Amino acid sequence: MSRRPYIRKVERSWWLRQPRYVLYMIRELTSLFVGLYCALLVVGLVRLSQGQAAWDGFVAAFSSPLGVAFQLACLTFAIYHSVTWFALTPKAMPLMMKDEPVPGIVIVAAHYAAWAAVSIVVLIAAGI
Amino acid sequence: MSETITLEVLRYHPETDSEPHFQRYTVPYRDDWVVLDALNHVKDHLDATLSYRWSCHMAVCGSCGMTINNEPKLSCHTFLRDYRGGVIRVEPLDHFPIERDLVIVMDSFMDKLSSVKPWLIPRQDRPLSAGEYLQKPGELQAFHQYTQCINCLLCYAACPQIGLNEDFVGPAALALAHRYNLDSRDGGKDARAEVVASNQGIWECTFVGACSEVCPKQVDPAAAIQQTKISASVDWLKDLLTPGAHR
Image 1 (spheres, helix red, strand yellow):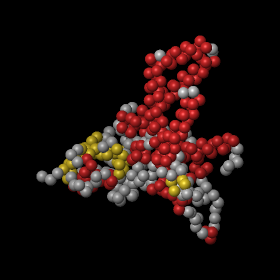
Image 2 (cartoon, helix red, strand yellow):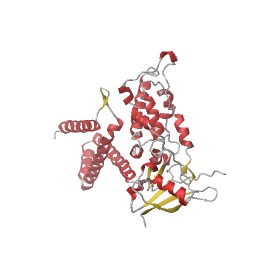
Image 3 (cartoon, chains in turn purple, blue):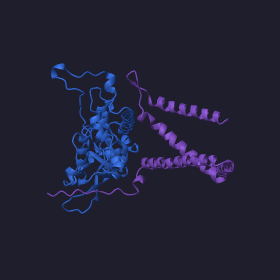
Image 4 (cartoon, chains in turn cyan, yellow):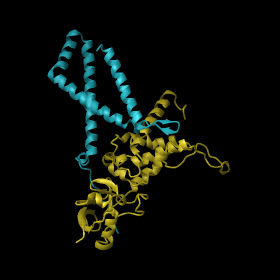
């Protein structure tokens, strides 16, 4: 009897087969916006180094309706990325205390607490 | 007439078929039947040419993994009652070549599994007279969940990275490597790192997490891989700062 194993090709639409793959792809997409926002902050630093006029132009562009809409989109994606990442942290960073695993909810809560603490420091530093 | 349910099974006979095709079977519906019972009914009463793997019928042997309505599942663990009134589509596991009907070729997995050296590699050889290696309950708990793997390959079928790169070592093998790396009796982490921490190892994983969702034994390979990424990064950093000193 001859062997002739059949290999099925992965379709380009593989990520539409399961809701879990769609959510994964959305999460991957959010990285693009987080990365874009970081790149724009670097552009802002460069404009700042070029003097008052360049910086004012940068601030004006960020304050325009298009700029605000972009930042809102980035904020939404960053929150989605952060929340889904925090939900996964007990898997990546399990802790043992006295030979017992620390409950996942404690690890997740610690991340939210750290997020809040860092946000408060940033807001205070920004003088808000 | 008593109630029935329809199975739609992917068939492939290499002697006669150029590609797989679906074949429908109508089988009796019973509340306490699993998909494997329905396949056995087909084999015994309707079509003896149907090929599939199974053995224990109790989610222990890991032989009967199949794609059931697009989801990798153990057919002995999947009740007909969850699909009542519908059609059950049964296919071989994704991402593996089809040998025949629902039987896949799993040679690639066997090679990957042995490549991560999934056995105890003690730090030092000890004579038998030294007795057994002792382990505290907490040390056992550190890796116990990863010992539950039954090599059913549902995680490989669920992992899109396996579909996109067949050389990826994959969830079950990496979870087993992690199991031995965590074992207090083991000293083989560096020997495994060559494969585990390679580009085809943990770094090919993008944390989709599907492997852990479909695992019938709650092994959680995704967690094992992310933990290995952290551990491998720390080892890399140590090596960079103090070459050779920490080994």
